[in-house]
Image 1: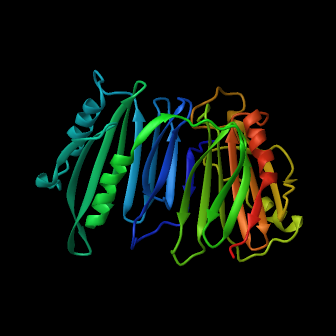
Image 2 (image 1 turned 135 degrees about the horizontal axis):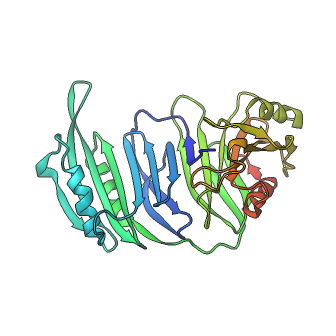
Image 3 (image 1 turned 60 degrees about the vertical axis):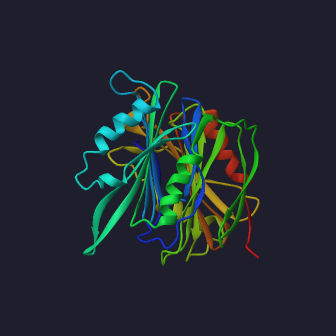
Length: 341
């Protein structure tokens, strides 16, 4: 069940204003995370692999990629990583040579530059920055870019580099966590000790209902992840039957996999509203060894904490009896909702 961690919201084609928020990239299975400040993603994906991970996101004209991988050649420190990255990026024929600047922060080695581009017949440039460092036997390349960048957005790229940090996952003993979801309302949920809270993704001002995605990740296992997306629904869900009907119509979409429904749709007993969930398994992976990025089971859930707000939930792992998988499913019953006043 090739899942990665993907939040595909409504892509924002334009962006009148980019502003930075704290972002978290978990390097699950290796015990550490990368943090920095950047625009809240409208679309993102995280794919773990044997070497580390590949993360990609965008927010209008802003694009971000993070690569955690084994060092190339004879390896080396952050400067060696930057030199390797730049040896490839500098081959771009549209590179504006006079824009290239290399500099350092206390934690990473940076190179910024601009490349020429054409937008609707008008000349434009794309501002880029690579932030490179070495940590625990891995090279990390954080690449951020903004198309048709303003001076304020070029400064935002530099501020991203200056805010970049990495280190062990924060201590967390479990407990309630609250999230502001714009005009939709405020969500509170008890987050188990085995899970960490990621950053918020949001697709807003698109002409369609705003969507907000919350991500949670396992400290120890990159094959475990948990995501919840909330949006205003044109359909009102008032009863358990209402919400069960959508669950029966919307089984998980798994490309190239044979999915078996292992349990009936079960009620999520919310403190307010209605919800249900079911567990599915990939029959093709049942007797095979665990493969990184290819989890074997998925729980899909739907919750309507109030009748006109729908939440879609996915929790994935390699075993339907995994304690972390079960605690995440159980935590859904703690969801509480407050309307915006």
